[in-house]
Length: 313
Image (cartoon, rainbow, N blue to C red; front, side, top):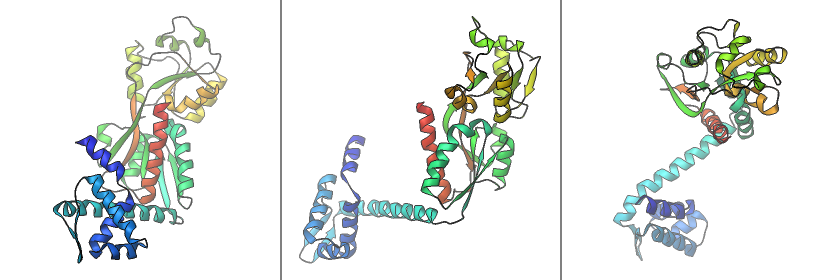
């Protein structure tokens, strides 16, 4: 049944629906052709194609015009709804593109900002050049607080703890693991039998209490037999982390997305350590009862496209 419906769906085009709806409205193939600005034979052919695709007669034809069959009456509601939805979608895009100085406020967790945001924003600027995008980064708890009171339109980051998600909804995009980043040439990169516990001999940049990945990192360290780090620096700042690693032998425990581009470009390196079950969901957080604006919907679509590229990487 599903395969049959999909086959039929692929055969039906917008012109079929337009001809069908005009013929129903005017009860005449000739009048429908005049309204659509095409020939009567073209309308008749289009309607026959539609009936052949559906495998059912939609009209009873007579000299007085056309009358819907029971199959036609069933199809009418869905055809009208589909064309109306398409028209509304087109109008929404047109409004979003012509919105002038419309403002879209996006909160971004620093550890995921560099992975998806540039690609998504570049596409959005092409689609909606008149919309100003205000990008706000900061701790997850702060961003969600601003989102909850209307200071932000949406947040791109990791899924928060359940008690922080009251009144909010989350759309999962991909899962991200924890990474151990160092400078190129770091002594641990060439250490035989490298284990997580070996990082204790070096300064370690770890997430501070309250950061969204801190519980995950703590569980990872405990599983590796590390109850405390003797030379611990607490930060999730990408700017600080990158700069400090270039100058020292520190190890930076951070979300993989925060250092993915640096590792790819050879600016930083990743220690070949198994991070166990350290993956966490990354996605879009929105207010549950407040629908996104037209610009917000378009931006979210761009983020989803960028996320698909991340998942395929």
